[in-house]
Length: 266
Ligand SMILES: NC(=O)c1ccc[n+]([C@@H]2O[C@H](COP(=O)([O-])OP(=O)(O)OC[C@H]3O[C@@H](n4cnc5c(N)ncnc54)[C@H](OP(=O)(O)O)[C@@H]3O)[C@@H](O)[C@H]2O)c1
Image (cartoon, rainbow, N blue to C red; front, side, top):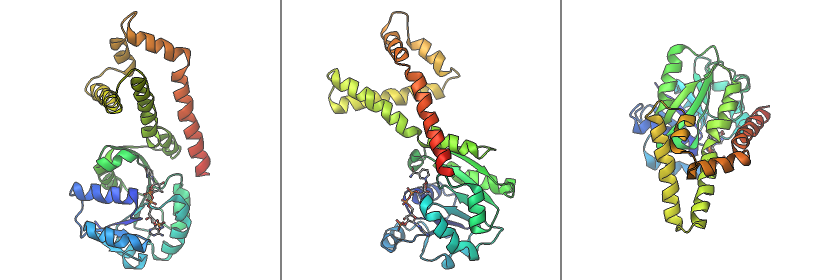
């Protein structure tokens, strides 16, 4: 299967590296179409696929086309490639907020898969939600999910609105985690730890809690109960969190992101 990635930027190259690392493609089967001339030598030096300068050089050969340009560049791209698109080609878009209907109309083809990855995809720890139009076959969908899974884990959703919801949870989510880590690092600093010590205390605590969660059947609430003994330190912190309604604040924050994702999609 020949794969063409359009947009050799952060996300496009995250995918290219992940495919290459996992041996799911060979460099003969991977093409990267990049507009910026100054990026061509760097992409060529990576030696993980053929670097193309014009869609005329590569689009027709591709079975799968990955759209990895910024959403604001999508309309110009669609206009350029539309005359060359074969309706049998499968398109995987990772562009935030660009609906499958808009893509289908823009390129004049109906086999569209829309995915929302997140930043940890860079290290193979990403989380992606994806959906597709009815025209994509089961086999094509499995093939694309295997490719997506080289960047981490994924879930298929039936409803495109859930892509906006995933944007609010897993897409923006790493920033929420870093927000909480930052607050805890600050607290540790105020208690007397050095910056590097504070970062280690906090990052290893997050890592350990997440790994423990993964390796058990307990819910978050059950784990909290295990740590928070009556009259103890954890209970004091939890009591303070409940007084400031932090739990509800986090839900409201995610809802604000969901609302914004829907707004941007319109
Ligand atoms: N970064 C993330 O964490 C993340 C997460 C989820 C989804 N996404 C989505 O991933 C997409 C790419 O984001 P990014 O951060 O990788 O952007 P990026 O680094 O700017 O990469 C996009 C690349 O595409 C090139 N390009 C633009 N129009 C083109 C065209 N017509 N033909 C070929 N190449 C073209 C751009 O060149 P110029 O620089 O010359 O414009 C740029 O090199 C976005 O739609 C974004 O919503 C990103």
